Length: 453
Image: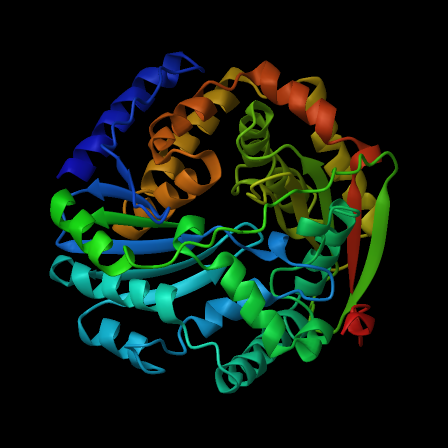
């Protein structure tokens, strides 16, 4: 009921906004509690008794951005290694214990962080925390597990990269946009060459450096009591040893792009030609980024967006057209993807895309556009926080990226404060032809990424 009331309040604000393109702040009030253990582990808690479930999300401040040249894919490898057993949990038992108690679990890796999570009945909070605490303290990084999971990751690479339509082109676009910026210039999944060359000592050193309590956040959201949850966290994580020498992340300077970059990828799995365009943009926490997110929605979010209307409905030169921001911790990428219709020419499509971008930079969105954008953003933001897991994950990332999970309460307001002039300005500033990278996808027999194996 509380969640329904929250949405009702938001929808009331949205209705009032019909006469005002810049509505009042949403004023979220998530009662976020924060704590820190003596070993440096940060704890974030959000109680919600409306559903008898609880989510536990453990996020480590390590991702592909922390990897060295020649040793890529280690963060993703540990997403798999973390399920291979620890001191009290034999290999394969983590999954069995969670699922047999009515829960779900998984892990994900990005350039910016690695997370592991469980969704459980609220009565099983102790189980989730015990499992996460045990593998934080005593993961089995053995030669057997390493070789086994290296093979698994290589097979995943074949399935998700080499044999997946348009994925090699997406990776190539990131390489072009972030050329000279190593943290985001390489894919989180790594490369076959680096996976083949990995040595157990390297992998152990990577684990010892980053998978420590003082480099992690434990986030709990759902039906629980704060005092009991904090006591359980202290019990299961309190004796984990801190890593006094966690490598400091020092990103290189992002080179400024002054001329267009382009590449062609022949993709045997692609059914249609495509054009992917990307621009480097500011990090997610900077003011201009909020305006660029709304610009992406205006250009490419859904069938009412400008690119879909022009390219798909009116000109019939594309079957799909969209725009989005990648969501990197920083710097980020603004991307426009278009899959061409049969018979359409790349040059024709690119001119139409350029015209739409230029139109936003010159004229900007209308008042009606602004009302729609902000109502859609409001709905997207709040619906994205409906599940306990979504809240746990978002709070953990806010704590990790911003230093305070409580800033989630004002995050939506930053989107709602964007003006039409802001959108015009950021599109004109960042989405210029000189700063654009483009990848053309040609259906063919061979990917140009074969040489990167």
